[in-house]
Image (cartoon, rainbow, N blue to C red; front, side, top):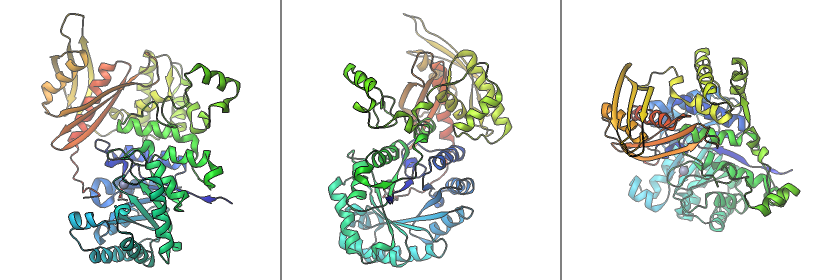
Length: 512
Ligand code: KIV
Ligand code: ZN
């Protein structure tokens, strides 16, 4: 029988560390439910001790998800670990993931601790954690750049204290596949009690090798857990991408000889959900989930695929969920059909009031757009105006005028602290004029570091999905807005980003 490869998803923890990718509790819950549907083995739901908000997210996910193990990150100290255990109290299956840096550089410059102090702290933390929860993962941060002799001592000690998973992170994305695979192999061979734990890989993508390194850690090193994120979301160049690693192991089972639990048909929906919530667009040529991943443009390829699919296709688009991209609903669809499609898409709205609000938005959209795709529905439920929580700013209406040879101008009505505000401005295009009109009233002074428009479902009839990234006082946030009118979508995205700037939740950085 093939060995099992454990898929550990850290979209909600390491993925969220990506600047601008912070998510609300409801957004995290939606993603966690989708990860459960995907049959992810372990969901790292957050870093409970980093803020009250993170604690509540981990707790809510631990209560809502039944089929996956729920994990919280914790630095190697009693307070963090106790907080993680408290947040995980109601989970069906819980794991604490504790870590401390072990490279000479991190120990000396960041922790200002001696190797012996680090070894002792790692040992005591795992002992403390093990008394609270049976499933303990330990990570030596910057493990790949650590001295192997020292790493062997630390890992042997934490396994002796009861760590059940040992994760070897390539924190800065410095590894190359063969070296990383052999690094793990050597550790496993040298550490006498290495067979008492599951070995795990955690690779960052700074040199574009996170997936290759993870797979080498599995194939050469014998790791049986991969840590990854949907769409490879993560700080800097991101983490190892879940969809790529899973499809590599499935498609090349002849080589890897491993089984994964993942229900791959939910991959595309998960990718879209994460992209729409975070505003991190998936590049069209991205493997597995990019819009062109299964498109054959050249005549020779098209001819080949029509004659026999496997001439140019190594995976079936429908196996990763692309077949879901079809017209699902229209103007005449009723509330029940809408509600059922929401369920099929994995969207659970909390109250009847929210479903009614979403259905009203769906009807409005169906009046303007004859074909409603799954992407439209996902964008619609993503609209923050649906949630009961009152945000500071809300879109009401917009009129703008632009004509060749004349300077465009816009007039926007939006709510600010529950009061309707009307504001006007000129700009060098209708989008610019609309956002300047908002800024004329709000005066946030935030710097726009990204503006992008994407057609949700391909044609000009499609809704435009706009991402706006704002930077202010050292914080970066993404706002996303969707509408058939891209100027309106832009205004919604801008207001959404301003709302996120309002949520100032203090958070301790994981690697701080
Ligand atoms: O990259 C890293 O080292 C991490 C650890 C906290 C596991 O994310
Ligand atoms: Zn990481």
